[in-house]
Length: 461
Image 1 (cartoon, rainbow, N blue to C red):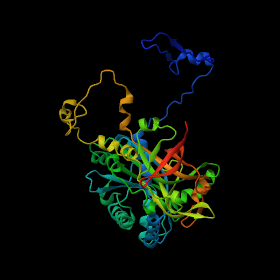
Image 2 (cartoon, rainbow, N blue to C red):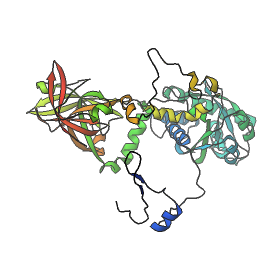
Image 3 (cartoon, rainbow, N blue to C red):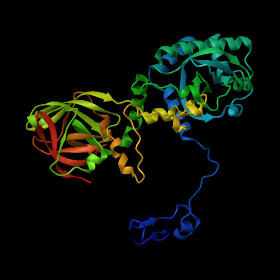
C-alpha cells in the first residue's frame, strides 16, 4: 500500500501470530493537517444540543397541532364562532432550554396560564403575547379587536382570557390522538419567577412558539412543557393527525423525490438464520422457508408483501396473480410497522434520567454479583475467546423475493389500493434472498416433504 499525501501508515512486522499490524494516524492531528494542506473549519458559538434534546424536539413537533387536520380546523372554527374573527396558527420553532433560562424569553409584564397535563404533577405554561391577548379580550367583549399596548391584564381581563383558553382546550381534547397529554387550566401567574418555582426539579423545558393572527392583530404564543412530560408521551405512528400532516408535507415537497430511486421488493416468505449459518452457505444448500405466503412453484397465487427499500416502515399486502405467464401483484392494503424500539427509547431517555436513582447495590448492571443464572443456565469462561463465539446470538431475517421492480420515491407516493404491479418475473425463474434489502444469494424454489425451500444457485458478496 502506498500512502497518499498527508496519510501515514505504520506497519509492524512479526506479531506473535505472524500477522501484520496496520495502524493509521488519528484524524485531525496537527501534522496531518499541515501535510495535507487542509484545515478543518470550526464553527464557533454554536448551541450544543444533545441527541436526547434533538429527539425531544422532534417529538414535540409531532405533538403540536399543525396547519392541517381536524385538530386545528376545529380550534379555528371555535375561535371564529366565539370571537367572530379569523385566526391562523403557524408553528415557528421548538427549542430546549433550562428552567432558569425562561426569564430570557418571557418579558415583564406578561400573561402566563398554568397548565396541568393530567395525570402528571408537573406544570406547564402557555404564554400569550399581551397585544394578542388584549385583541382577543376586546373581540369577546364586543369591540373591534384593537390591541391596547403592552400593559398588564387586569383581574377581569385575566378571567376573560382564561375563559377563551378553556374553550380552546375543550375543543382540542376530543380531537387529540390517544397517548397525548390532556391539558387543563389551573390558573395564571404574572411573574416568570413564580413559573420557574413551579417547575421544581425539572432540568429541561421544551419551548414551542407559534405565530398567530387574530383578525388584523399578529403576535405569538409560547408553550412551555417540562421534558419529563414530553418524553413519556407516545403518540401512535398511524394516527389521523400524523397521516394528514404527512400527506400535506409530501404534497408540498414531494417533487424533490422524483430522482430518488429504490426497489419495490415482492417477498413471499422469510427464514431466520444466524450470521454463522449465512456465512456457511454453499452452492447446492437448501434453506427451508418460514412464514410462507405464496407458492409460485406450484403455479398458484397467494399473498406477496411488497416492501420499499429496506422495508422497515411496513409493507403492502398484495394478491399474487399469474397472468399471461407473468407474475403480477394487486395492491390490497398498506400495513405500517411500529416505530423502531431505539427511536422510542431515545425520545424518552431524558425523562427517565430524571426519575429517582436506583440503588447501585440492587442493580445487576452496576453490581454483577446480583446476576442470578436462569434455570439450566451455567457460566463458561473462555480464556482465549473471540467475538465469533457470539455470532449465534444475532438473528437475521432472510427474505425470499419473487421479484424486484425499480421505482422512484415519487412513484412510491402514488401507490394506491387496487393498483396492479408487474413483477417482471415468469414461473421457473430464480428467486433472490436478501437481508435488509441487500441480495445475498440467488436460488430456485424446491419442495422438501411439503415444505418450501430455496436451493442456492449462487452466492453474492
